[in-house]
Image 1 (tube, helix red, strand yellow):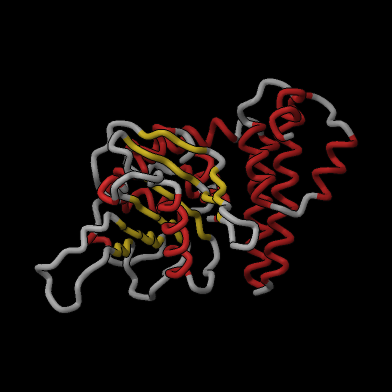
Image 2: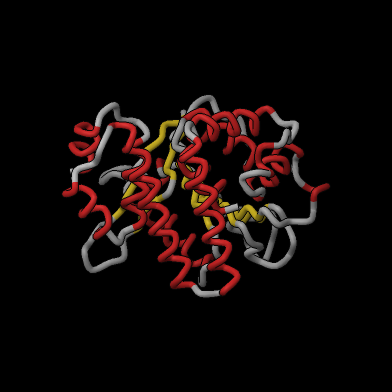
Length: 281
């Protein structure tokens, strides 16, 4: 499943794919979205910064953060709180009124059940414990999607089809899920996997992570993911010819997997190696 989730992160950085994803998850109607492909928020060197996997806004200035979660991490709820607070920090300029603060959503797409209740979707909004008639109306919403849910009758069919697609391995993900949006995403995945070599690399990545997961070694998972991500970037750039040794040295010394993922995103859009190198410096 990891390989498909890896693709979803890249595909949601395309406006049309992101729009379709949000309309299925929330569900709401959106005219268009604008994507910030490399959103890093660091307000002070002494405080923890965040990197948002996908950050978007729609025609109403509503903000969306989409996060991909392969492995269960501790304090996921507090993490969602911190992400949303960091998003708010830049959304209200000095001198503005609080009512101008836009609505915001943080969405976690998980390959595990974060709460153990076997729900495909968990939606959290601020409520009053004393009375249901009082509403804080703070505009915040946090959603956890679980690809391993069991309550199929309680969610829309289009969301169910998408979550089953995301949960599938690379081979299973090619079947017809009877959904136009999933077909659109499948086509985008096929376009990215333009060569047999790329497909083999992603399959290798998936199998490597499965093996490490079975061993239950977190450090091994991280090392394996880092190695495979470097190889994917190298392979993506090889269409431009032989890569300079200086760049390969830089690549294999780089330990920040999030940065390498950003490089892959850049590599998929540039038209030459020189353009790629200039864009990452």
